[in-house]
Image (cartoon, rainbow, N blue to C red; front, side, top):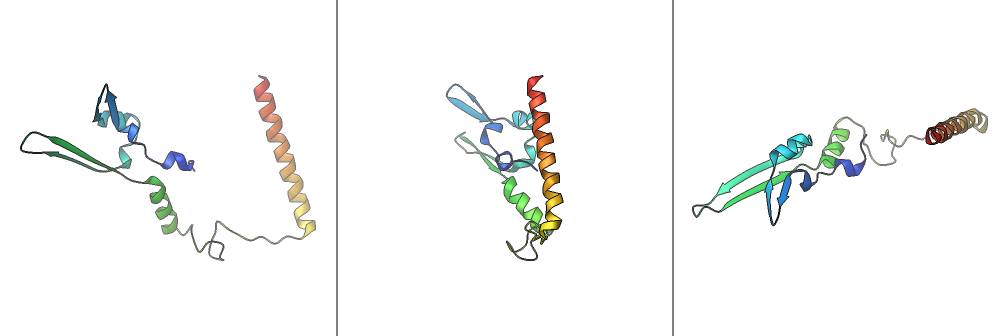
Length: 119
């Protein structure tokens, strides 16, 4: 899953600035693979020749939450129907071997990252 900040669209991916002027750059957006975030693009030319461009972007984070809700991945926060908040009851004897495995995994990850830094 992407970081929340990666789900936020940026206008910079759609706009090119040249000096004191800027313009909507659909090529730039396509190269950044961001056209899927484009919700609405409206160009209006008035009788006097003035041109306006209206750009509306999807909020991908809201779309992700909607999709998760649709798939049943979100329920009442902290309730029994919330699969992202599952209560697990273990005895100390059941938890001890799991805790040792987590510690061993953490040590392995730290050792791997230390040896990667030394290379």
